[in-house]
Amino acid sequence: MYAAVKPLSKYLRLKTVRIYDPIFTLHSKCTIVILLTCTFLLSAKQYFGEPILCLSSTKHTEYVQSYCWTMGTYILPMENDSVDASKPVPELALLEHQHQRLALNRSGLSALLADNEQYARIISIAEGVGPETRGVTKRMYLRYYQWVFMILLFQSLLFYFPSYLWKVWEGQRMEQLCCEIGDALILEDTYCMRLRMLTKYFRARFSAIHCCYSIKYAFCELLNLVISVFNFWLMDVIFNGFWHKYIHALAAIPVYDWNLWNLMTSRVFPKVAKCEMFIYGPSGSPKVLDILCVLPLNILNEKLFAVLYVWFLFIAMLAAINILYRLLLVCCPELRLQLLRTHLRGMPKAHVRQVLSSAGYGDWFVLMSVSINVNPTLFRDLLEQLYMEHANKQYVQSANQPKRDDDALDEQVEQAEDRDSDRDREQDHISMVTDEHSVDNMSAAPAVPAVNVHPIRFYTESQA
Image (tube, rainbow, N blue to C red; front, side, top):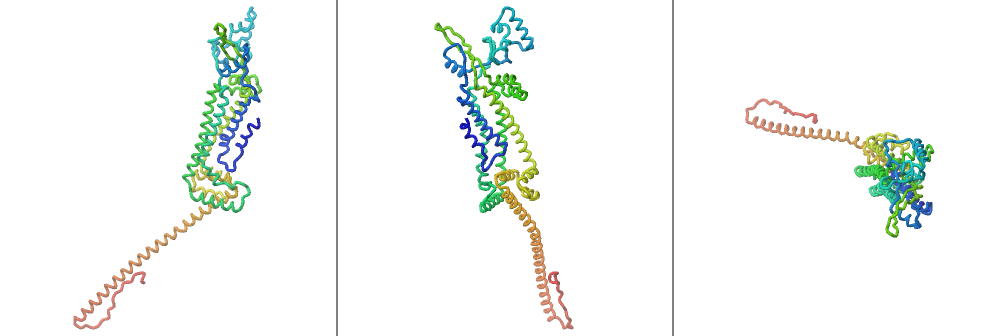
């Protein structure tokens, strides 16, 4: 048996690069391994024998067993008895009443059936097996045991689908980013090379790509929840009210009430069932064979599905909690900051906040995925590099801002000096023309005493 399920243990091994969180791993790996293990157990005849054994008055036992396996057995459900349920009779009173009737020269199971079919079935050999009135008593046919193997395989594929979808969408991005640097000891050349590569990658600012990356992962988590809810409906339809009936069976385990356990589990996985077959005599007259069948495989089914009942409820609740947690992360940047700091021992909170100031949820999601898969020291150096780059960029911007103001002021001063120079040249030209005109007038005019005339000059502030 171990040799059959041993290959599944390799599927549970942790990979060098992890692309799932723990809850996703429970859905994509643990659930699949549990379902496939149950499938192997139910298909191993050498451990649990034949799935059906029938007892009848005919000599052709193998033919009868094949017929009942193919056509299906049935049980008589207690809740659908032909007795009027609107007038319930206490069990003790019913037993006393029937014992009194038996004392009146009527004995045997046929007399019980004629008097009260419900009581006759209460004292029968097993739950769901007893006398019936043909054409009146309702039957519940059991054909699901032919499909249990296929149902478990289908559930395995169903729970594997989100994992497969995420592997396709993920495209080995984490493996390319985090390969060779997940161990505690890393070669120095590899350490420096991968650190430069990661720093260059996160400097490139693939915010749109990272946002799409995180949305696809959240969709796969939502798909896990949808599949868990769909699985409830599927099992309830196939096993005829599995979730409602089996809760009473599980409630009997803590109090060690094994009678209640056998009673409730037999309504879903009966160990004994009825089968009806027609045979014809030489003259063509039909004869009905009342066949009793034992289903040994249901002894294993009732235990396996009790485990699956608890497991499916557990992972469904985890999936719902995980969706709420994801929404909280999207809406709360401070929580994202605190979660990232858990992978950065000793790094100041202000530095981490400054790195995340220009990063969205998608960038944070990729950073968290990288922190899980790389050496903690390397991841801290990566954040330090990103912080230094961010700090240098802010310093350069603050240094360039005053420089731009001085350049503008110098340009304004130069323009003012140019305007003053043009004004000076115009004044010089006006003075020269005035002097020439004065000389001409003096030669033509009568002589007058010489007077020293000094031309008026206008000086600008720059010339002064």
